[in-house]
Length: 436
Image (cartoon, rainbow, N blue to C red; front, side, top):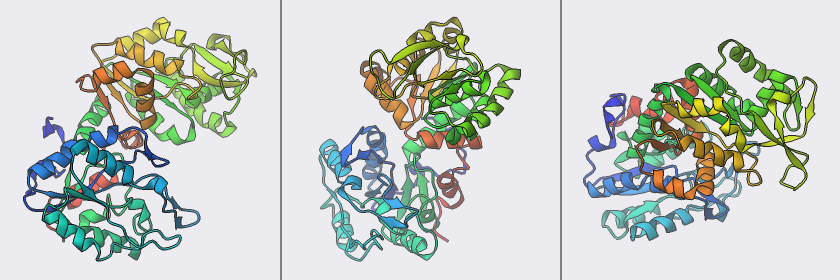
């Protein structure tokens, strides 16, 4: 990994003195759904950082968030097995053949864990004496001070800092400024882990791509992607849309109505239509799969050609892209001639319609000259499920990169830099130095 391309203000883990230091590490191991690990990819990508810390004589305390146990509207936290770190710890223990200790703290009704109490001191003594390989704190979002503002948050940040000598952030996917990703850097020498470094370096290939640059963007909601989509449009040579985003674009351009597409989103999409009228960057996928129902029922869905759309026409649910779209000459030229391809897209309504995504990924793989960068948990999961052989064959391929944080990538694209993301900026502002 050539770190010379990173901003020199970013403090790097490899420059930290870790010998005999307790190292507090924030990971993005948010892979647990209903008490089960959905996909360990995010955990596997951080093992290099964990191994390095131990190899350099450090004693790690790990932490991550899991799910969204904090109800912002009700201002309450739900502590349950569904959002526990226990499955993550079990996976690490089986993978690394060593023991991790998960401390427990008193829980307050509706307020989660109020504080890290002094019972943690015994666990830290066991860590220092190597009775355990590491400590894994409970879900950071179980702690009352993680997401709230004010004194409780500052107290939690100080409690976290009091556990360790050094802080490492390897959670690029956790871009929001919470106590465990942002505030703690004010109180400890802080560094970027190896995964965070790799994510930023590969993000540079999206922000400063070798051209022609093609992006494929899809989503279930248009309003959540407006900012990143407009930013991507300015950067790309060609843009391919899918999902509800594409449906919304078609409604705005052709004056049709598609079930499930909101009027306010159509109004918002008109800006993209107007921009594209002058620049012609959007490559339209010519064949859609329309369905009478939200599901896959034989006889209830059919292929519709974009060329046949008429103003005022009303369609049912458009739930996928017909694979023959990727045989169209314009699509083959755009994807086949690109030097950089960025994909944040599931083309169909999963799990019922997956043919469009499979055809997309297969077509992209035919381009052997392009750097192919995939972002987003759903995007990666779909790739892995539909094309497991290809997925395994390209995991270590230099021409492929799978980001662990899709939302973070889109936010960085919208800001046109990863260095403005609050946790990254906090490392640059406060990291690598003794606390103030």
